[in-house]
Length: 246
Ligand code: NAD
Picture 1 (cartoon, rainbow, N blue to C red):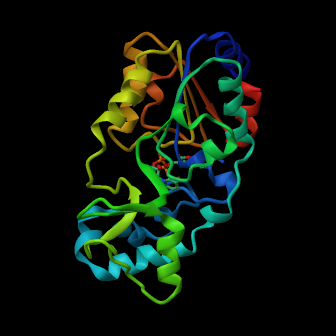
Picture 2 (cartoon, rainbow, N blue to C red; picture 1 turned 180 degrees about the horizontal axis):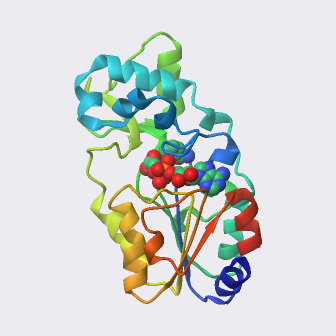
Picture 3 (spheres, protein in one colour; picture 1 turned 90 degrees about the vertical axis):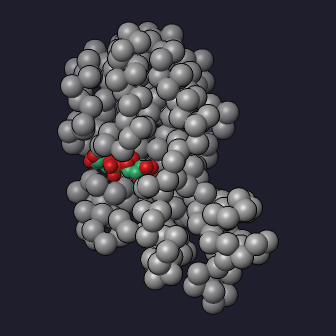
């Protein structure tokens, strides 16, 4: 199965990739729903990622800011899985890399940022919920470090959050349209490190399949979209992706 997938990936002129939190676990950033996921271990953590709770409850925001401050993302570096995907771009095969991740490790691995479609935003910036003022996250975290457990917007006093799409928040229409277009315009879709259970991002898989693309899914456990795959591979991404894309 690996050899078949390898051969399909090497010979596909146009490849679109969809990644999820599982590609960054080997960089030390936990996922949500995997065996060691943040929500698997602490179901209460889900509240901090849910817009309705975040906006109204200062306690939830204080918890979220504390988590941001101590996030392993700040020290994380791309792993062999991220680096393997860059080979697709270097060989001129990559249509787009659609990611649900918010850690920017794909750009740090060497992708052209213009090829990376971040459907759930980025945690490296903060944004005001009221006036949309956007600033580098590290500056906002300095205020938390200095003793403000729930910093508000310096322009309008509104609630600040990371520039990510929380659960319950609408996606940016142009961004999800670009993702669906890349899914409909490839010969092969490679989905890696996602439970494929968050919508509409997961719909990239049936979209690619309906447009005639081959679908290869690589993940540590079963996904919600395995039925659409031509090949499903199970195993650690930092080993499988170099084999598939190297
Ligand atoms: P998810 O937590 O629902 O699923 C991750 C999947 O990856 C799981 O099925 C798990 O078994 C698998 N996995 C974990 N480590 C693996 C490894 N080393 N090799 C192979 N498989 C592995 O993640 P999701 O589908 O991306 O959805 C969760 C949402 O939360 C997304 O929006 C995601 O961006 C966000 N999130 C992002 C980060 C990040 O940016 N790194 C981290 C946590 C959550």
